[in-house]
Image (cartoon, rainbow, N blue to C red; front, side):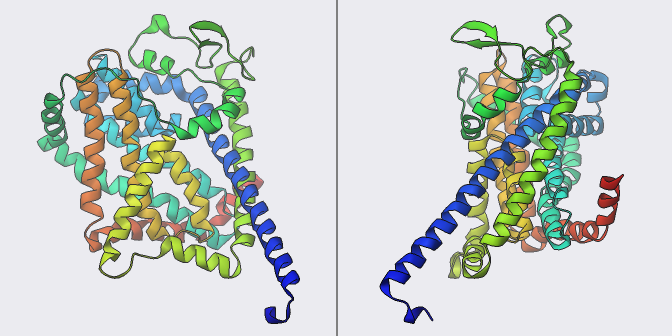
Length: 421
């Protein structure tokens, strides 16, 4: 059929295809941008709603002495603030202030790893309308949970008995004990989304740290009202800077807005991807992303995916946002759950960079802060070393996530019923 077309008609068809796919890519980029902004606002809303309670949990020294309680507090706080990077930075600041020991903080860091994967699950729930898409996206979202849970179940008892993370990190920090304070800050994502999200709301994370330190004299509102710019303090320029509503009221407003925007963006992303990836282009894209390296190098594919996941997460400074952005792609079949797994493992490594940067930037006691940040890194590396290189062990988190996706997709009616009510 194409052979019967004139050169002019062929050129017109090629230009038409380029324009069609170009517009689709631009629309997809815009939807992803709004999707990430909605996730950022969702994180801010959770901090406003529960940030002070989260800080209060960190101040319960008698509870934190119990490793199981410490683990669960790490989970709860990370769920509340919707960011393991934030919760680990807070824990590191508390340890640096000597309000908490490194040994007691290690289970909390493990808990933070588990809590961070809740955001992906929220994103997956937004795709419940199509059973097959929901099954894949839920499995892709929860593979992160499964890896973190099996790692904690295995490594927490080992740490309680041997304290291997504590001693290993302590030995390494002694060699870099003279490390100087650093103001390193790498965040590609913030540079892109801050112009919009900071016009909507700004939250003061230092308030949560003050509560955790029992520094009641310095505790104020979580909602930022005054901001510093060029050493000049002035009123913040965002929607709620002069708002008379409480933190909780603003948090509820933002929670509703961000969830609605999140669901709308997800629906748009899925529809655009479905229509764009039909035919040869879709098959080619899926093949490129999910195909292993050729020949004897096939075994390196997953490790390259881990490196890619680590680098991208380091750039965006949030494993929650990175893995949540991948969840709809798993749902439409562009990325398989098997490929999502190593990317998720890389995200776990990449998110530890935030803790290391925070440790180098805190005021005083950089050595213990850095030690805790390294504990977080070695915990994730140990988990990967156990659950990825050996094929039979690699399949454990994968099968758990896929089974959970199958079961959950069979009971979508419960989500639909809850939505109608």
